[in-house]
Amino acid sequence: MKYIIFIILLNCSFAQAESLYEQDCSGSSGFSMGESVFLTIDTAFNGQTIFQLRKIEWEVESEGSQPKKEIEYSLIIKNTNTVSDDENRKSTRTTTCDNRKISRAEYEKMLNLFKDALRVNFFDNVMGLDGSTWCMQITGLAIQDRNFCFWSPEHESKQRGLEGLANLGKYLFKFADSNRNTSK
Image (spheres, rainbow, N blue to C red):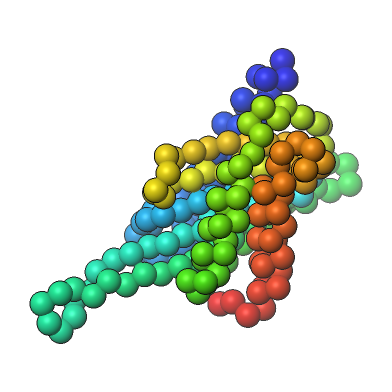
């Protein structure tokens, strides 16, 4: 039974990550994947946060015979919070998007943290009723596309072999909070 619930949670989390396409948080008129890695964190009571680390390349006409290659690095942060009234009869959902342009050095640091997060114990089967579900989705990198989810990797992360994933989430939340007033 717990495997059925896990599969349902897994499918729901990836469907929710796809919601970045529905509400375009990228700030561009045409959403281009390029290289992207997603970390989606669904909490039991506080909503969802999706981090998308993105590298997009395109060519621009330039004077001369060769087009010039442009590269943009960004971290897109989408927060969806749900607040219920005291009797849990009515809830209010708010969604915010933040598309932050980042430097190549910041991109490389975050990408390395995402790569470290790939070193996980895929046999971890710890589950709980509360807590959070963390899912990673990787597309367009020089590795095979991957998707995986774990329950509350910050809980006993070292013993569970999820230290890299927990460190990634901590860093991204810290980066988001420390740059909240400097973006836009």
